[in-house]
Image 1 (cartoon, rainbow, N blue to C red):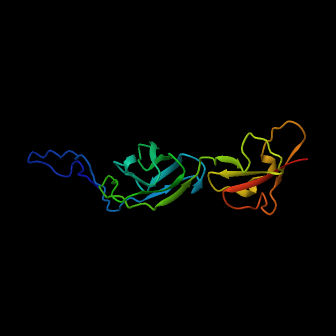
Image 2 (image 1 turned 180 degrees about the horizontal axis):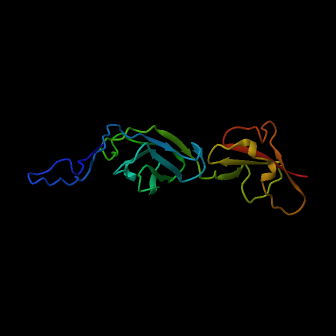
Image 3 (image 1 turned 30 degrees about the horizontal axis):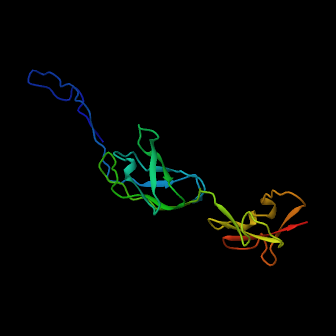
Length: 209
């Protein structure tokens, strides 16, 4: 609201009209700002870091990166805090960078910041993310001793992955064989099924053609 006193609405004893008063402006605001957290990345992602946008319902003051609450059993850092438009102070972006694969939750607590009328913000909803950006590590092993002679065929080979694989993406032609003399084929072990076996172990049969 504004308060004005126009000129020439009163005078002194000498009949001099008053000058107009400088206008006073007041903004009455009792509504707390709300905030919404969003990300263009899926809640299960192999991308790291994960970028978020915090959008407030009105301009706020004193909102900083430390006001973002991240909870995880894995070490992480919060980086790249940006006030998208510092003339309105409504939209902020930042990133969560995980040191290893894992889950984290993210939120903005109530009373993290205020609007210009000192109304504290309302807490945001909590988002939960799973980040898996380290590729699985394969380890090959066999019942036969490495780098020795054998007269037993086929040679059983076991590939153990550091995490459970999507077995539909693994095929016998994914394995590279280097050899001298004769021909070598890769085949699924009987009864296991290269594409259907579950778990961390994957067995192959190697035989001479």
